[in-house]
Image 1: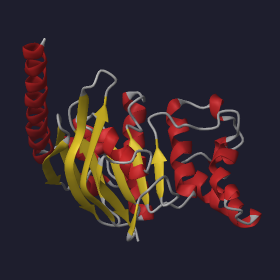
Image 2 (image 1 turned 30 degrees about the vertical axis):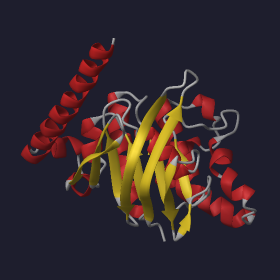
Image 3 (image 1 turned 45 degrees about the vertical axis):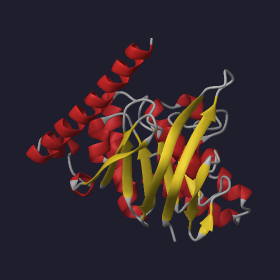
Length: 268
């Protein structure tokens, strides 16, 4: 369980003026159970569009997504989503947010309570379980979002810039938590980010996407996610291999951005 196949996926958005945007073209990819994959690329390369297709929020123009041997035709509990902002029920307590999914599945009360207690311990929110979500900091709210996603026991966790709105220190702590949860749960994780450093730290596989049309430009297999589990992430970032890979990818994306800007100026 947990294998995901993206098969020749293309996505075209038709505009009211008769023109169109080719957001993705012929993207194919196999993601195995338990893999942690980050996706990086310049603005407009189709990262979030691809994630929304995998989630079942969008139907591709052509191609298909297969999950656990069946076609993805819409949202499903086997694929959990963590958004940039938690999309939480702010008027509810932390506990009520985390137990919402299991409640909807009619999980027995004792089993549900044990699950929620375990998840709150895991994400470090045991002392805040009776607080309303609006009383929490942004980092704490994202911890709630992670716990709520895990409460539904998805095979795949999809993360769309989940740490993008956090301050630098909180973001680093949350990166460590993501790595911890990945190792402890064995879940398949796909994470979209605009941060090259974050993509390197949180991707044992890293995809760099190119825009217009969105497609896979290059794939890396990296050691940094495994190195960062339970360790000081700053130490990982100080290694020569991390620095050289970061510089290579930054140059790659910079060249793409320059090309995009040049094309825009030529067409203006």
